[in-house]
Image (cartoon, rainbow, N blue to C red; front, side):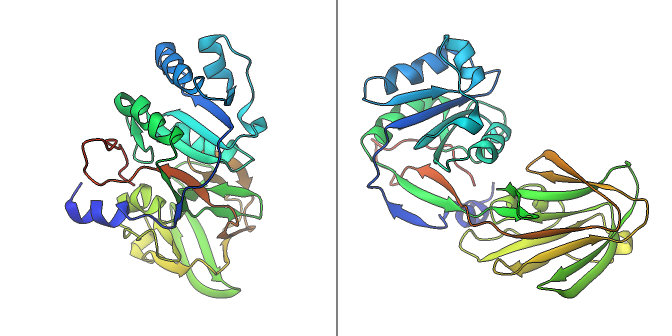
Length: 288
């Protein structure tokens, strides 16, 4: 990662001084997380007066009562895994808790802590030595939310789709492409960047619409205000598509139908630790 890129994406969107009380914590784990690591986290948390909930995977590893992620009503969710686990968990959690990601996977750009620094980070968390960074989400059809991105992809592989983009009911683009990707500021450093899209500063009040391999390079990426409502229409007959949010297929979009996209009212709230380069500071994992 270049110094310029790191500078751009390390600046928080919204900061709050921490004054909150945490009494209920959910533990969510990737299947490959070792049970000894889960046990170590739980042992540290149980030294405080905190009620713990465990997703089925974490519960199975340490023989605790399980709670489905969607049923957790917690103040904080500690997510053990990589970015895939974190993105899935954020979209499953209904109570909008604050999120602490601990990277135990191969890709963990969104996680705050490395596995080897987890206990030190949790100690600082329990002392209240953290702040909250809020990141925007998108919502499609007033129902499906995404932290990183949503994509419209052809149901039949290697088939070309045709799109019309309306912004606040006014047509702004029409093109043919293999798909279209709509990204938040957070998602702008993911698949969107691989498509040649720009990196969006976390404080910019915008989101990004990127054609995926546009035919004859008909359309460049579009940056639009996050106060706007975007409508993407599938124009070709007999060309159904998938609506994919943060890597998960959520819906089949019928040909000649539309998808509405706008900023969600719900932000994702991440636990962050200050980076003051002091000896007692946590060596954070965060790169996004």
